Image (cartoon, rainbow, N blue to C red; front, side):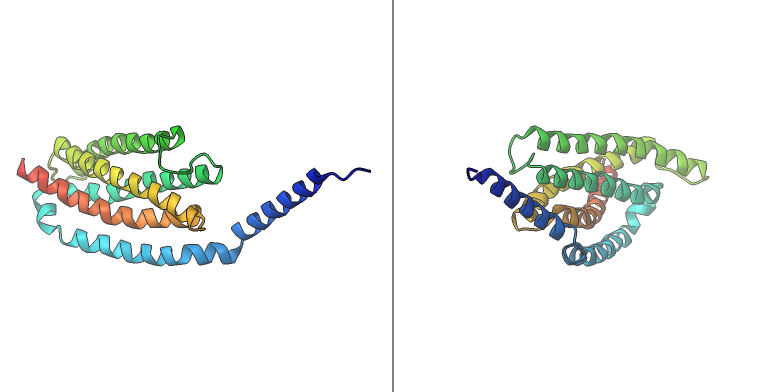
Length: 207
């Protein structure tokens, strides 16, 4: 019977896949890669709180800002973390290999930015309605919406760029992007979003 090298190649490929999947799903790999970034995420949340505590003037001068600020943080984390997860999946499937005019990359980033714009607009209006509904003073739907849109879109642009760099960079250095990108983006997102809220509030006060 003639020697068939294709069977040997197939067995070798199966062994490689099984070894990769085994290491990919191991507890050691998951905890070892994710734990450092989870610890950083904890301190990142504290940093965001410190920034918020320094915004007492803006919070007093723009009634209703305290209502939309946590929502902007939550929205930013949801949208950008989802982008990071989608990028990680696309990289694992070989759909994204580098930063280029890749349809998969462009669609993911564009979809994330569109979500940021849409949700920021809705957030500003809902924040105003809830503030008024609770009997509290509001700076107005236009003011709160403008702050939400400025902060949401600007932080979305920054975090989209960071998510792409992190996902591709971590994969090239042998890390699983799914373990790293989401907690890293959540941390960076809290800090960046609070800074953008502060800047947006200052811009609105100058208008």
